[in-house]
Length: 197
Image (cartoon, rainbow, N blue to C red):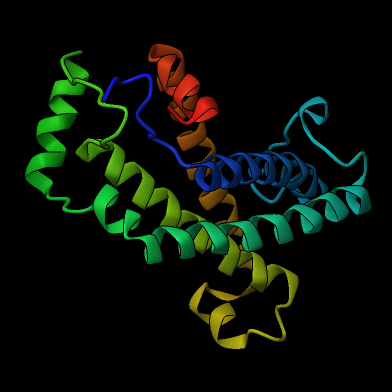
């Protein structure tokens, strides 16, 4: 079948991808405004790139996007797992394949097949899924600390959960930055995500 006609990203994947991206952007920008209210790491993020206007507004944006991220994320995971796509796209993954593909990528020699993830992509997406789970769990501790005492203690208390949440957010922002850079380098990936083919 002609590459232009082959379905690479089904409609459900394109919709959940777009909704996850929207939720992540809103949560990140509002989260930066929430962080600025405490500045517990000793620096602040320019208010011009935050969302919410003030702490209460930022919290409202953050909680609204939280429901979108969790609901849409669970739908994305469920469809991926039950359709078998998760296993097909992300496994097998071995350290040998990862380092081989990483070396090829750093030398500019890694081929990019739109319908198949290489080992670096597989590792990055799996890391991002794990990171999102850490973000949700640490966010639960920050939101409902009393209701999740075991989770709170596993994260080193409320203060520890703030650090876990912030650094997990930083990992997610780094992934998004690299993801966008790769899309800029291989623009046909964006067209495939928009059209599905």
